[in-house]
Image 1: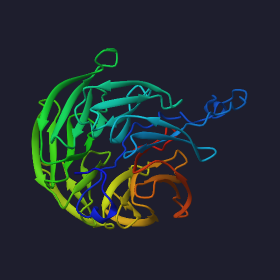
Image 2: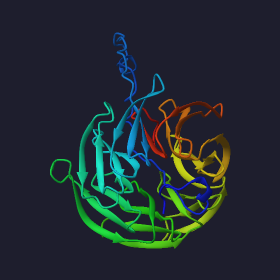
Image 3: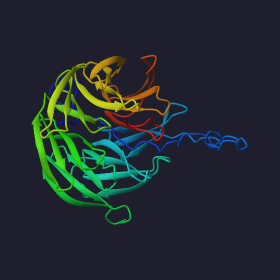
Image 4: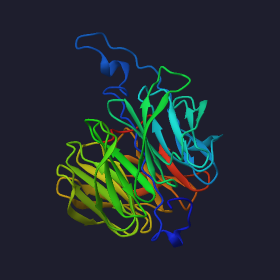
Length: 355
């Protein structure tokens, strides 16, 4: 099961880690003068408040809040047991923490780092995601072997998420992606070595196909045609054509031992793939399906976040209890900050696009 295991067992057990969130709207990080209309008088830039960086500490049941200006952990928020992934609500007002063993979600203000509420009764929410049309909220139950499909009801304070269907799956659901049309969920089953597609309209399984060893994170290209799957039990990323039923394997890309989590570079072409055993990060061209670069990923790289400058990659160093800053153009580590035990997810509002 993808839980809290040491590096010695990393070849046999996948620890999940794809933090997948919603991109900032175009121009959200532009100054007032940059948004001014042509011919208008210059507007003096207002100071921009630094957005906090959140690091999810799975073994400490906490979230570290890191100041992006001083590079210091300024706060640690207690959450539920075994938190594993983070996701932003469609209204961008809450960052959700999935507390797997507590069967709950912690809502945190992504701008102020204040806890807003805790929602209970969410069974084993190991991995979570909203559909692009903002109608569906999907959780993967890593221990309980099912996918839960919820209706997102933000105006209902008592029941913002209503369970519509529980779909039995293979063993140990790990990571997911929802297509741009909000029609299908693609999910990896790490202990039965499968990829499963669930139709959202009918809430039924469309197809399932066998994969390589211990499939973990998945990434769907912007055109909804190719799905990339990290094999944490091997040294490959598999690529599937998902325009056919069932999906068809079209390429195995050699990356590094323990291929695990993805983060898009924001250009709709390149993705980072963390290799947790090799302690490297591969840069993959999704069009040519080849590795075009390699970055350092010390301490067992897990979830990653690319800052809005497009040049700075934040990496949760799972075994080192650190958040690592990687200079992408220079391909070097430039900073590490101490956080809690088993850092897994990482998120900030000040991020680059997700595709």
